[in-house]
Image 1 (cartoon, rainbow, N blue to C red):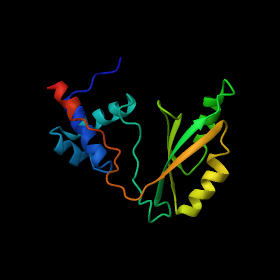
Image 2: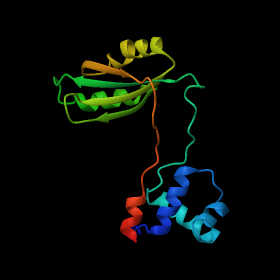
Image 3: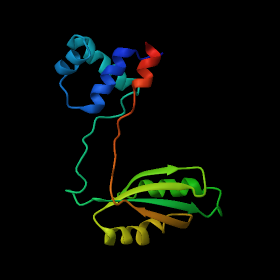
Length: 162
């Protein structure tokens, strides 16, 4: 049976999502806990699936992937397995950072990163439009990123534990 998280767990999660490289000593100090119980909590949060993985956020522009494009995908519903086939193929496209099945006027929303518009044109023509079941697409090239984060707002979770 998984233990429910408490306010200290939420504080640990908040600190880790801001800086996953924080030392256990610094983390324990910030959440007002001694180092050993703090480390045990982090391990439990990982084991119970609250922490999926630790990662680094890279500078996409410096690494040649500065252009962000969102792509709406409509599928032909000619096969029972069209969604599964599309999903499996989309996962394999390295430029695709996110792919979401959505409700509305189209089926999937893709977030892709490439170096420039020429690479995007090649990605669209050679990979995206040839994915299984693709009927049509609509693209949105990002001109400016105002906010981009993976951090979750855990304040509401902490408030329910008070």
